[in-house]
Length: 180
Image 1 (cartoon, helix red, strand yellow):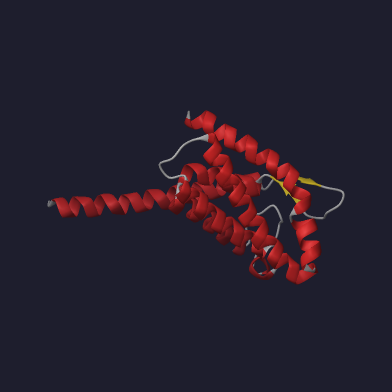
Image 2: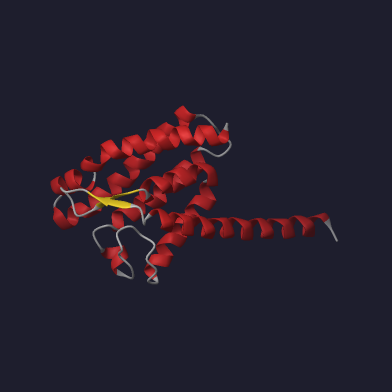
């Protein structure tokens, strides 16, 4: 067997490993959507799912983080209750929360890539803040086409930011504790 064949076989196993880790991570991510608290001023729940996307991306890297979120969305598209919103099927990609899913994809890709081979709680917290802003920016912009941009910014982003700031700091410190 030539070295080239050995490398090719090894890379195909690496690809299977990445897909498998992305899929298993998507199941864990779906479980975080079960933790939700409804605020009296909004029908949208406060959830751990948006922060879990960011936190898991710190560890997974760009490719696996992107697989994780893609699998989460695909599972919801085929009818599995993987999202905190409870929306499943085709309504998922045209409904009022679709922009947040775009934000999930972009933030996972950004954080996963930015943290590859890097450590540090300050760096992690900085990237978590940027990831949170990506999620809220795309989410509020899309939501704005349904309820108006001003309401979308207030009820789709601003009211959650104090809680998300706490989650960002917590997950950044937890990341540093795990990574040592």
